[in-house]
Length: 92
Image (cartoon, rainbow, N blue to C red; front, side, top):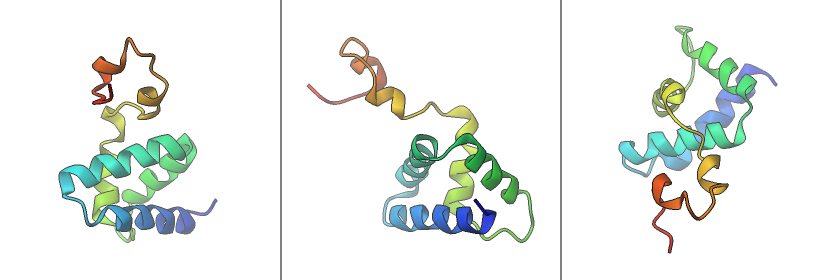
């Protein structure tokens, strides 16, 4: 997949989260990228951040830079009931 297409898709995700406060938008974008994008797609986008002429939305850049420190949101979805409290779910 071309970097141009990845940038367009990432910017669409940021556009969705634009109405959220930044402290919610960045984790939302981060979670989406980790859950639905392959590591190669994320790596290609991260490499694009290093270019001076990148066209990435600033929210995407912040979410990408947070990738290294975050856990996969999928872990929350596959956790058993004994782990739900640890993962911060408000269910049940």
